[in-house]
Image (cartoon, rainbow, N blue to C red; front, top):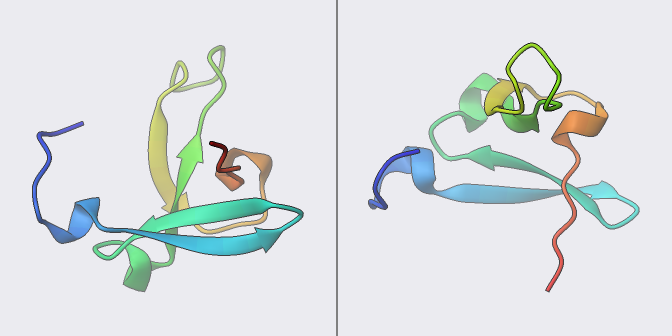
Amino acid sequence: MDKCQNVSGQLWKVIPAGNGYFKLTTQFRERQNECLEGNQVNGSMNGAAFMDKCQNVSGQLWKLVK
């Protein structure tokens, strides 16, 4: 996390993934084909979110709710 700024790593793109889910990438990492991925609390990163190669995995499927 960093303070809010107008930088390419904080400009997010929402990509439809079907069934009401989305993948998220940033302007900075889109060309590297990287998406935001969440890690399980008991996983190797202790629940931290990170950028990884865009894949069809549950950790990269996000649902936007009000």
